Image 1: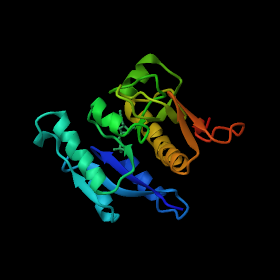
Image 2: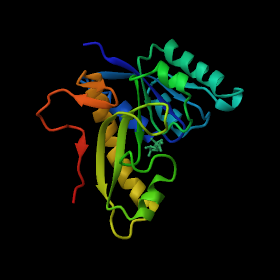
Image 3: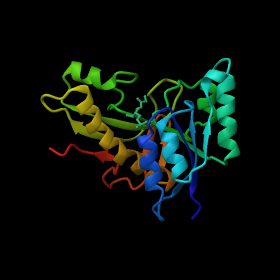
Image 4: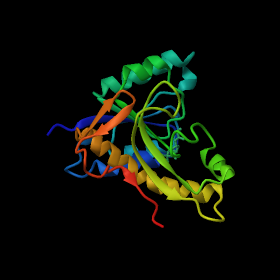
Amino acid sequence: MARLRVGILISGRGSNMRALVEAARAPDFPAEIGLVVSNVPDAGGLVFARDAGIATATVDHRAFKGREPFEQALDAELRKAGVEFVCLAGFMRLLTPSFVDAWHDRMINIHPSLLPSFPGLDTHKRALAEGVRIAGCTVHFVRAKMDAGPIVGQAAVPVLPGDDEKMLAARILAAEHRLYPAALRLIAGGKTRVDGERVVVADAGAPVPLLLNPAV
Ligand code: GAR
């Protein structure tokens, strides 16, 4: 079976990238990580990727005049590495519609909230301020609108009394590390289909495998 060749875009510590790289080490995992690209030259995640023997590239957005030339360089790196599918993993640049369209239904993102609640920044702080009892994370196909697009899977975690931002973020991050590889496995294994703005998972009738529940 040919494995789907994946490029991962990061901007920072890259713990979700690491979860994907580690999952892809399993012989039956239907995707391989062909490239990790960072827009931040000293992103911590690059060190892990290099040590793991994965090809890396840096495309520093500050070296370009505007989003389009930056994205053209990004796109060129991905194509040069034979990347067929893109995973955004803490990639903190807004992408233009032309880049998003070029990777339509071939690019997913992970966001630390149960979308469509709390898109954007300061997610955990806003969830705590609203007093929600359940928080979580979402893997979704990328559309031009930020943190929006067909949902592949979600994981829920409880918000516990006394939680601060850091505690909630850590609980959600642990769920992200389970959800993202599970979502990529499903997509790369051909088990999903994007139907308009929804993701249809094969095996209708079986429980949706990408709904992870709180452990309380
Ligand atoms: C993760 O929590 C990810 O969900 C979030 O950034 C963090 C990156 O951590 N992404 C977004 O907020 C995107 N809107 P990581 O670099 O350790 O994977």
